Length: 454
Image (cartoon, rainbow, N blue to C red; front, top):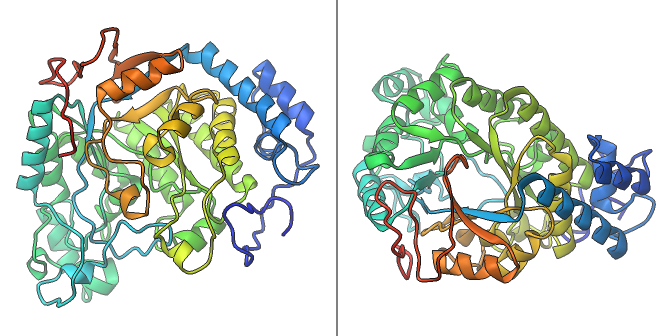
């Protein structure tokens, strides 16, 4: 296998991509620039991420130099606080026909039809159920509702969108649409779900670029128009997921049914244009190489230069165990621990215009997640309460994190626990001793959220 193919994640039938991790830069020059705070080039990023293209594998001594530079940059930029948010995951439906090979969250939408005789473990929640779930969680003290769902064929923006989609000669094949009456459960419209999940003052973090595409499919509506209407219905910020790797030769392998890189960026520029904060992500450790990863970082940095709207960057390590990529032998695992550490570190060093870098305990686990807070990350995700996507892909790191857990873990590494709002504008240092709970949510009073998931 040639240098740059990620041996920890790609099988012997590694893909031959046009882009490869080859540079004319040296590791030493790239590290010097990183230490000096100079803006890094793509070649610099590749050198740091590989610990030098002049040798095979990851050099442990060079790796530590990169991690130290990133941790120092983190301390200079945001200090020793570690932030987290009191949040609930309420994913509306698992019904989806997109067919992404890295995902085991979805269930084929045909299984949800009234005429289907197949069993499945999926779900669809009507707006009334979403509203009940959110209200219960608000009473426990959450601030944020995060919702990322499958692309259910009956999902439309509103009643007008249903009419447009029905006007196609073959809506199922032309625009991936079947009317709600074809299914056991009606998911409602996107606007109805937005109103339900923003109930009673919850901050609604939802509608990825892929979902926004689904909410405008078959129409001439712009992303800007769709996001403006979603905002009016209660959407408060947008998760920058569905990005995976923002290089089309990789997307053509892992998610050929999804929007391409240009569409994703167009949607996110529209998010900024209507005044919604947004996050950005990378999902790495599958078929891509280090050049793809750094080009992705460059596209996020360029987007932030243009919009200034990205509140945090979230590296997501590929969880492989029950995904089609793994089951079909296209990968034989996920990223190594060293790759995870370098991904966090280089994200901090390369994204000089994004203030916060997240370590996800759902993806990495507690011990690894804490380690990554010393590699350049400063945010430790949220309480989650329910997390279905990673669990269904084979993740085993749990679904709930209490405030007491956060306080104990963050203090154990000598850092300061801080409850935050989604956009980081509201912050509260948690300086009391456990038991403790959130105070920023509209109904939060400092009592513990709960002892077990909803």
